[in-house]
Length: 301
Image (cartoon, rainbow, N blue to C red):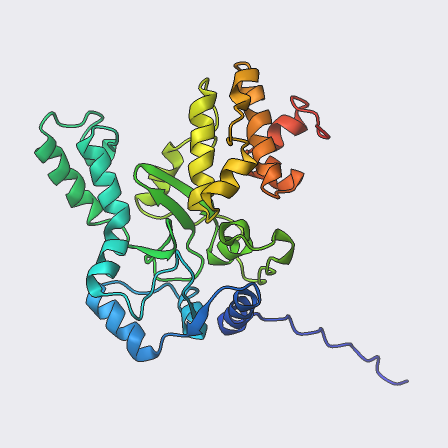
């Protein structure tokens, strides 16, 4: 009798960093984003030596494949050293400004209470911030830590004292298309090696955990709408487009909306839907999954 043949298992598909980088850059180009020749090894070496950090190994192949130069992207090739230094220091400078205004303080810096002397508080905060991993700008206020120098670091949004975790890694960040006004239906597929949880990053993870992801909560609908306005503007929308979405061109919906978080959510959801978001996107962005699952909000509302 012939020996039974055993079928060899099919090899697992391996998505390399280079393959993903090429697919992403091609996707950005097809979406109308200006992309120039990628950085050379010599350019990487020069940048890292000048500013004292290393590009994460999953961001480096992207910039090596192509250098996006649409508004909001850092120009690692042509910006002056002073401009790049400001970009790299902006997250910590923003936090130091919050410290100077007594709006931000960490217990790990020396107690729950900030020192009464502002200069003393700033010196103490700066000493600790200088030890925090350098945040490498990806786009506008979105950064990826340079340490640890391994693939899979999370992406943070940092704007003054507003520090939030936005994605588990760089692939998750580029999956979200709305930050570039790219159609959400054309988002690029995440590779097999994409992170499925957020790695802990010294200092930044703890600061992000302090913030309330539900920035819309509260009793002041006016401030919520103001926050929504600036978030859309910072996301690349023109002022007239935002005002049209929010119906701020002579008509004020706030007069017919009573107090209460539920009504706040209703108005903010309407704004996002007018901006072209799907119902699922609105539910995810406003963090309403638990409320729907628990029956607090009707799923088809």
